[in-house]
Image (cartoon, rainbow, N blue to C red; front, top):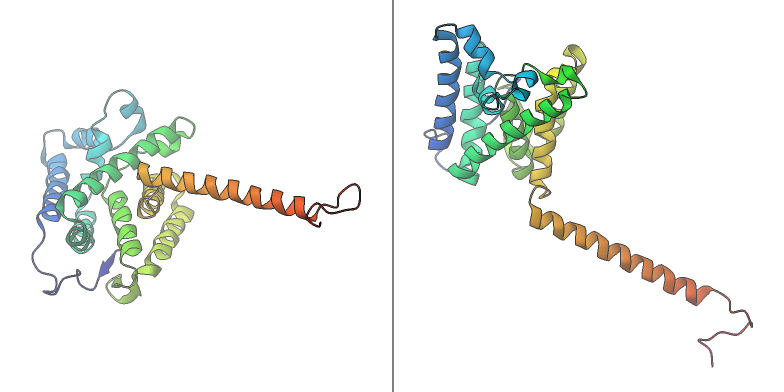
Length: 244
């Protein structure tokens, strides 16, 4: 079930569709429709969907194209609505370049996770298709970066952004219970990567800074414990080296 902000964060309401979001919407419709209308459309759709055995044979383009391939008009409609609301909101916050880069990188990264998992768990290898992976990451980013924004869950239920992350996780778990975990590997990966990115763990410089800080805190704690141990440990001769 889609989740949409009541309005993108601008003073003019919804407004026109930003260029990056519009480009993603056009690409999604074009890829989905062409896969059906082309000669041997079923075969083209199979080439564009993510299927791990084919990726391992060299079909690397499907790591990207599966994120623009919807298999029916209903999925296209909901993907366009999700991109319009969530994509527009995040593009206004991030800018066009960052939005498009985020969408593409998350699509490919989560597809790669599914392919790698298929080496030990073949069911995880798909086939996978649809924008749900990137939209999961975008929605999680919206929830984490705009926790006080009001969103409409399923068009009717108002939620605060900070609640959305748990709703997303609950939805994925519910779908996994009914349909199995394997079809939703890219979406779970997208949710995890979105949280890591929002917390700064995907930025090498910030990650290294966190590691150095944790190491310094660990060394400081050990020195404090050693000092306390030296002060409280009774001397062998019964006297204290701190008393004269």
